[in-house]
Image (cartoon, rainbow, N blue to C red):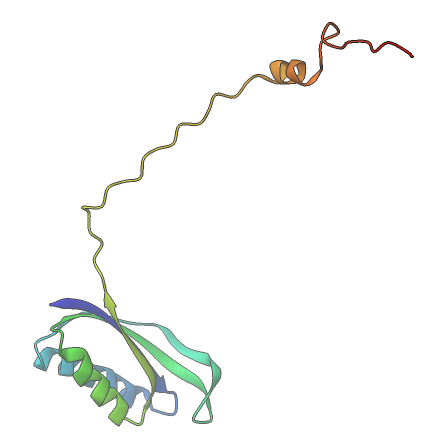
Length: 135
C-alpha cells in the first residue's frame, strides 16, 4: 500500500452537519476500498480563496492522510468530481526517503593565515624594489 495526502476544498455554503457528513463519506469510501485513513486535519478550516471558483470567494479546507492501494486514488477522484460541493481537490503520493543514499563527503576548509601574515604578504619588501636608472 502507498501513502497519500488528499486535500480538498468544500463549499462554505454547506452547513456544518452536512460538511461533517461529507468528510465522513470520503473517509468511509477509503475504508470500503481497502484503504486506511491515518489522519483528518481540519485546522485550516474556512479560508479566502486566491481566486474565485464558481463565483465563490471562500472555501473550507480538509487535509486527509491515508494508506491505500494504487487503484484507490482514481476512485476517489471520480467521486470528488461528481460531488458539486467540492470546489477543488489534490491527491499526492508521498514517497518514503531511502536510507541507502551515501552522505556527501565533508569538505575540509583550508587553514586561514593570521591577519599579520596577510598584511606582510601584501606589502613588497624594500630589497625587492629595484631602482631604475634615470636616463
